[in-house]
Each structure stands twice: as C-alpha cells, then as structure tokens.
Length: 544
Image (cartoon, rainbow, N blue to C red; front, top):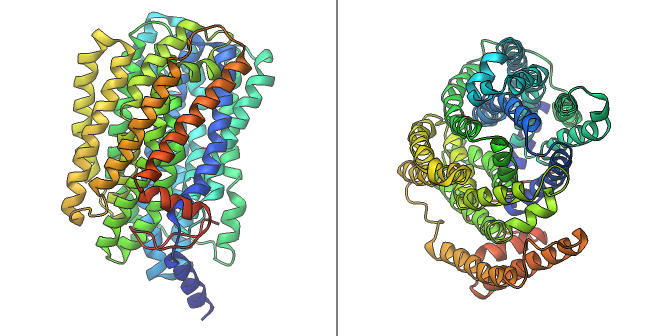
C-alpha cells in the first residue's frame, strides 16, 4: 500500500502541469554560473599558458576522456537510461526502478574502470591518432601522453556522476545536476592559481584539477540521490530485462555520439597540421559558442527530454511532437540574439575575456575569425540538441546514427575543401554546414515518425529572425562608432561592451514585442511564475 502511494505520488509529480520555460530557467541559471567559472578558468589558462605547445598538449589530452565521457557516460547512457527508468517507475514501481538504477551503476562503474586502465596503457597510440601533427614535435607528443595518463581516470568519476544526473533529471530534479559542472571549473581554477608554481611541467596542475573536479561532480549529487532513494533496498539484478534494453539502446547511441566525436576528431587532426596554436585557437573559439549552447540548448533539452520520455511512454506521440516544436521555438528565440552578439562583437568579447599575458593581439584576431564562422551554425547546434533527445524518448537511437553518418561525410568533405583557402576558419565553417545538414535530416525523419510538427510555425520563426536582423543592424552601427582594436583601459572597454550588448539585446526584445512574439510572452510568464498550459507538451515540470 505504501509502495503504491509513493509510486502514485511520483507519477502525479511527473504529470503535474509544468513550466518548461521556468525549469529551463533553473538549469540556465546553474549553467550560467558554471559558464562564468569556465570563462574565468579559460581566462586564467590563457594568461598563464597562452596558445602554444603546453595548451595544445593539454587540450588534446583532455579531449580523449571527454570523448569517452560523452560516449559511455552522459550522452549514450542518459539517452538510453531516462526513457527506460521512467517507464520502469510506471510499470514496476519505485522498488523495481531503483533496483534497475543500482544495477546500472554497478555495471557502468566496472566498465569505466576497464576503460580507464585501457586508456592509460594505450595513451601513446591514442595521441598519435587524435593529433598526428604532434609527432613532428617529440616534446609536445610526450607531454600530451603524460597528461592523458594523468587525466584518464576522470572518466570513471564523471561517468558515475552522469548516471546520477540522469536519475535526478528523470524525476524532475534539475538544479543539482546542473550545478555539478561548476565543481570541475572551481577545481581547475584553484589548481591553476595555486599548484602551477610547484608543478613540473606547470600545465600538470590543470590535469590534477580535472581529477579533483571529477570527484567533486560526483560528490555534489550524492545527497540528492540519497534523499530520492531513501527507503529503497539496495539490490542488483543483472538479469533484469530492462538492463538489456538499456544496453541495446546504448549501442546505437554510442555509435551516434561516436559519429559526433569523429567530427571533433577531424577538426583536431586537421588543426594539428596547421601550425602552432591551431588546436588552442579552435578551443577558445568554440568555448564562446558553447556558452549559448549550454545556457539555452542544453538547458531546454535537459528539461524537455524527461517530458518527452513520459509522453512517449503514454503513447502520446502528438504531445511529443508539440513539445519538440515548442522547445525549438523557445531555444531559437533565446539563441539567435546570442548568435548576433557573438558575430558582431566577437573582437571586443575576446579581448576582454582572453587578451592578456601570453594571449596576444594576433591570437585574438585568429580566434575572432573562427568565432564568426562557428557562430553561423549556432541555431543548428541548439536545435539538434532538442531533436536528438526526441528520438531517444521514442527509444529510437538508430535513426540519429544513420543521419550522423551522412553529417560526418559532409563535414569531412567541407573541411578538406575549405581548410586550404580559409585555414582554421574553414574548419569552423565546415562544422556549421554539417550541423545544418544534420538539422534538416533530423526534422524530416522526426516528422515521418510524429507527423507534421504543427507547433513549429513559420510565423514565429520569421518573427524571431526579424527581431535578430534588427538587432544586428543596431549592433553593427554601434561597432562602427569606435575602433575595436584601439588601446583602451580594460574597465572602459568592458563598460562600453556591456552597454553595446545591453542596447542590442533591448532592441531585439523590443522588436520581438512589437511583432507579438509568443515566445517572449511565454518566457515572461514562465520567469514571473504565472502558471499556464504550455503549447507543446503539457505542463511544465517541478524543477526542484
């Protein structure tokens, strides 16, 4: 009786009319904190190490455990685990669902221990594979191998943390998982500032910070997991059919994410062949692009995914489609002004964030050119963050893989075609072009499954694009009033940039309001706490 009451209470919580905009706001707020800390971290790295041998070796080495984290940890596992765990809560009750969670935890931990050991042993060959250009500079190659071996255990900590994140998100708890990445940034900042003078080589301090940060990301979620699992018996059942379903869903999910990582691998490989600092410039540029992706694309997708999984479990395919359409409109509304801001104000933004110490004017200009072409695809990047989980909610992890294979071919062809005339900017543009191809194919495939996405109205998209165009005109006018490369005090430059960004954003909001944008009205209602039914998917979730 008590078990039925607890399960019923959980299901009512999941069905409660929820506010996607408000829940996404919670995730965005936590993500904003993490991104601010991340930019502070990158600012410190840029000042201490610039863009050269040490940073190239570190970023290449860190990319390996990061790739595997997405393949085996947060990406494929979340995609497979959340729909099955949500369905298990409905069909087998709280005890059965938590038994599934503990079983997944044990199997994942064993797998990640094996992967960590293999990564440490195979580090020399992995670095030669991901950055073949390093072989021409033996010291850089040896440093990258050393750092790789230091950081590979990070995948164990972050993989388990990713499972905890999936469990909490599936139950409508978003704040703690969204705060966990801040632990990595805090650890890396602390180690960079206080351990660097005592390390040889100094960049080793960052690798130690990565390990400490991985432990922190795991530990911060344990209290929330403990509260949620209280009363559920610790038991493991590796013969549970649901475990097999998660494994079967993970297989194509891993393949799909592997395809995504192939794109990253191609960029790193080609950048390693384009001279000193190429990998670092791409890293710093994409860090700027990742800010709106994390704040808006990931935040809204994180909130929408459990909602879509619940709707799919109820066989409410029309609601899944409506949720997808609403989420895309919402994410484009908040992302397009970010795209305009990055494209128009890219040079002063990079100057304020990074240009100091070893990060000089030449690196600023090189990074700004790459940012311009990465930003072209920002709308596609964030929309894909919504569309792929929509397939996962339908327990279809194969379709994104097939589409991803086409995307990789487009990226390879575009990179090879554009890198010679455009250099690093060509690699960025190739990434943007392949993302648009991915977006188009995902939309076509999803509409075949769900029918036409009626909520994805042309009128709304035109309003958003129109408001962004007005913002771009005002922003360009402001930029042309002053020389962005003039030597000015940092505080004055920051104040001017803040005014320009605020004025441009105000123009966007004003233009959207004049056009009667429904997305703006929805955001205002969500942020002010007024309850309403969301077009697209029912109600919004308790964000805890």
